[in-house]
Length: 188
Image (tube, rainbow, N blue to C red; front, side):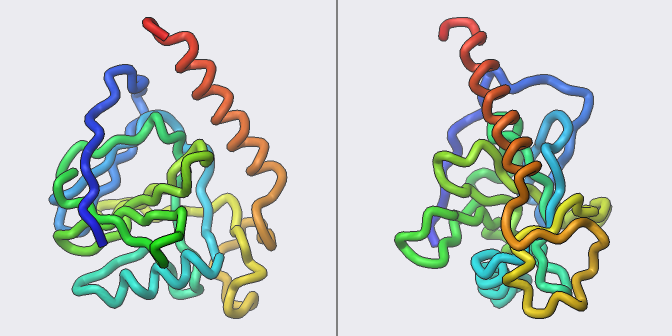
């Protein structure tokens, strides 16, 4: 694992009355997301499950994986999420040195708060472990073909063997919105 460096707060981060705060269990690390999430998901892919088991094996580790093997997350545009507290406590967790997905874990209490899914993904998953955090209710269950057993999936949301077309479309729209916003920003 390596310590992640903060890139600072983007000065053009959109202001919105809807703010989601994702904090680690001890509260020393927090992320803030502005605006509505693109969607909410439970991911059953082998990568999420393997990483979750590794993170949960750490002292006090919490991954966001439920008892049914799905990892719950809210998906936000990258430009709407920032670390507001404890950036010096962020560490990266990769399944292998060549893996493009980097889970972002708090070093203080080993909570998997978000991930960087590679350069081309326009979104980041986000979850909170604060005592007062509301539960995430997924709108879609992804990669259910990798679920250990389809019968015990705890969510009534539609189940998909991979990423459904409507979600790919929503992510594409979010990416185009981000490009348009960046193009219309002063000095660009």
